[in-house]
Length: 140
Image (cartoon, rainbow, N blue to C red; front, side, top):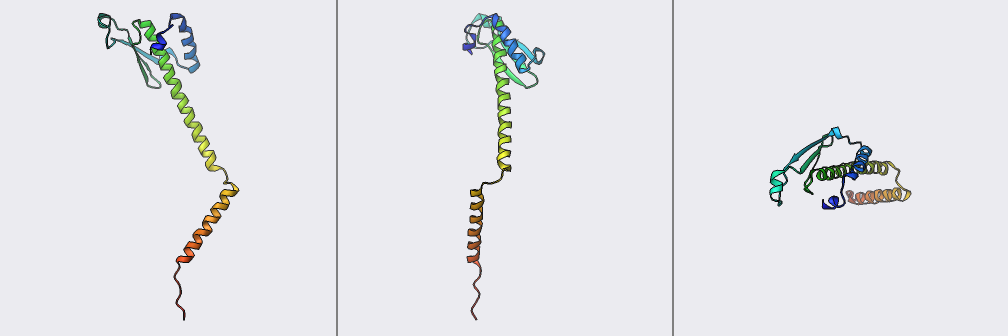
C-alpha cells in the first residue's frame, strides 16, 4: 500500500476520476466511511478518523485503507485499490467466459481423421475381446 503513498498529491485526482469513468464506476455507487485507524501511531490515531472504508455497492467489493496519516490521501488510495479490485474481477469474469466459449468450440468440432481411425480400431479390438469371451459350443 505504501507504494501508492509515494509521490501522491492532489493533482492525481483527475487521473483517478478518468479511470473511474473508463470503468463505469460512479461516485454515487460508492459508500464511504471514516473510522479510526488501528496499530501503532499513538495519539494521532486515537483522535482522528483517517482510515477510509470504501464499498462499491453494485459489486459488493470492499476496501479499507490506512496507509497514510492524511485522510485525503487514504481516500485516493482506497479508490485506486477499489478500482484495481473491480478491474481484476471483470478481467477474471471475461477470461472465464472466453474459456467457456473455447471449451464449447472444442467440444463441437468434428474429430480429426486420426481420432476417428483410433476410435474404429478401439471398437474392433473391443469386439475381438468380446468374441473371445463367448461360450465355446460342445462338439457333437
